[in-house]
Image 1 (spheres, rainbow, N blue to C red):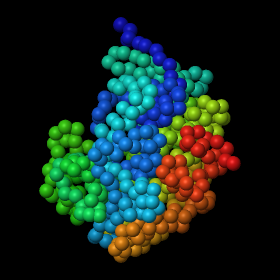
Image 2: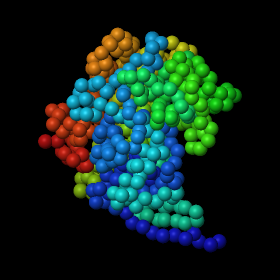
Image 3: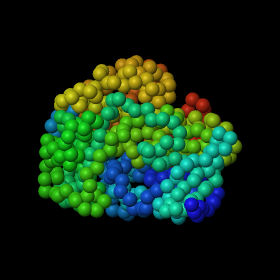
Image 4: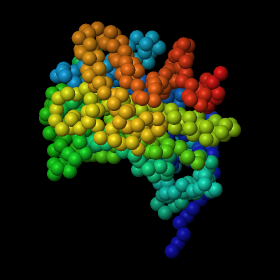
Length: 497
């Protein structure tokens, strides 16, 4: 047998995966002078499910990377906030940030809906221009270790091999990652997502033009995301067993759209796309989960490699890029001589805080929807199967709380959310609606604290705010239990003064 052609390479950091997590980590590290090699198994542009970005990504991470102008001029649809057909009302209600005073004063009161094939290409191309050695079409087959610590990766492409020696690995390879730690699944979110695309669907009227919708139906909920003037992503989230009842994914999606109130009307004049990368009906069934370990022995898991929640609050790109920033900070701090165990603990702590915050907001919306069938009854906090799912709650709360007590502390969160929605619906002024929305976020966070005590509020958002778009803010950066804060440029850890 003929040996495979092989080559060797050296880098300070090897990054596995060229999506938002991998490209973000690679760019941040390269811009700080480290040698970075990134391996992406596919050739870009490649398909990924269309995504709705968050303010913290658009106005926090993108400026840190240096791609804010590229994203702003790419023609993506502006996102005015969260819009829902959910709860006790048949009407749509909005959590707007276009009129949110605390965002408007600094010009960050919008985000974007993006085609991931285009958005991800912007990130990866910028990583290459930033000095990252990008290898597309290369699949990492193994992570090498020496004396119990990462020492390199081996990648293959069409009979060729690269052995890259490195000191750190950022694993951003997605849900299939197996580099460290088993997945621990939530029993609450035992869902599947089925998606397709429409051409020529209608749009919401002002002031909600450009808005996407999350709409509850009896057997689950639908999303409607306008990705361009002509392209719309439409999908349905169902109980996991729904995909095993004999109906095709196409029939399940069509049936859900037909039973909706708002999405059905918006797509009525559009047509399903049947060709190209948007022509398939796709299903995803591997959520929700956390790894029991996010970092170890020089390996850092970012994005879906570490955790996936639920598409309801479109947190995927935020968690991916924010975790990449945390990983870059930790790696740079270790290179500067800081204790590696401390930096790994800091990465894990903040990453899990961010995941838990959004987990609780998703719990609140699932719990508040009082109508519908078995899907919703199985997703009430009072009867959640996660009440006995101690491994998942250990991963979620960093081992601080017992599962049953943790969920007991959330009882009533859905009813509280519904009360705020009634106030939002009754308020005609959009600026005041935005103020109610922020009050709602704070109230749901601080009124339903777990038994072990209060958690900080939205560490990622507030941190990016003080680092990037509101540096004159009097908000204090979060100091972790180990006494760590980010440096003024956001790129390293330091002891709090």
